[in-house]
Length: 395
Ligand SMILES: Cc1cc2nc3c(=O)[nH]c(=O)nc-3n(C[C@H](O)[C@H](O)[C@H](O)COP(=O)(O)O)c2cc1C
Ligand SMILES: [Fe+2]
Ligand SMILES: [Fe+2]
Image (cartoon, helix red, strand yellow):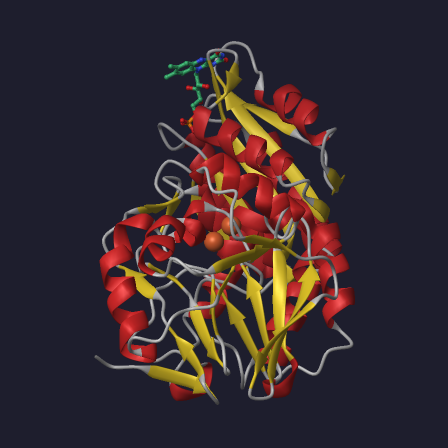
């Protein structure tokens, strides 16, 4: 079996998933996803995080290929979400002497999910475990990046930081593990998507985590999904810093729904005006065809957001309503926002979106309007004004 030694006696033991359509049964993963696990070998052996339960056999084979018939002394659980903790029980069966390492919140979840209460070692912020042979593990508690128990593990001797979901992305690994051995360009947009879909609500907690890790000398960032970051480590930390502060690049996302094309026609007109006004990054998404997963990724990236759609049974068109709910769930802030709607007999879009916008910390930069049926010259002018106000706000 091919073994990846990603550092001195630090090994990769993760698995790829190229069959699931959706991550968390929600987010499209056309390029797959990987669940990363790592083995750190000193005089004692530590396993850091595991894989989903369905990959147990493959996982055990990988570990055996790395350490042979040596025992594993510690299983560090940086994150309890079942995509990382799913193999805990089988690991305990295979390695009965193993100690599971986590913080007090981890311990409660291990009991709750797996009924395990013995051989659990509860650590606190800054605690260390000496593995011998110059290697030790230090724990950094980073709550809510992505769950309450999430933490990171630092191996100071090798400047390796095992970060859980932080700095992770969608996309299976295509033969390599460390960024410098392969072209990692496809993973960067997938990092925006992973973050915006899954972590975005906890920007303040990500900032707290970044403050804790800033003083550490870090050569290798080892997340639970996606490549190990070495060459691009500083870059991905910067991306996380910017995303968690809701910083943005100049650009506008237009997310819309349209059943018969009337709203869509105005969306195209607005986009053309944005381009005329000098906005180079304009991304249009038809919410009936593209999962809002992709919209959220670009919302995290670009300063401007325009939402449009028809009235539907006196409500927002359902795909548009779903996006508004998703924005609210993520506490989206610091964005320029504009919106318009369409109707035939009684408009509802602008008042429904207005009610949603109250929960977002965005600036509405243009007057919203509702277009009756196919609209008229006045609507054309409203679109033009909306586009130019948006352009002024983002450039
Ligand atoms: C199932 C359904 C429900 C609708 N409900 C409303 C409504 O409550 N109020 C209204 O004014 N128009 C309603 N409409 C009309 C649409 O909002 C209108 O046709 C709009 O122009 C469609 O825009 P589009 O061409 O972008 O799909 C409804 C249309 C459909 C198909
Ligand atoms: Fe997670
Ligand atoms: Fe995860």
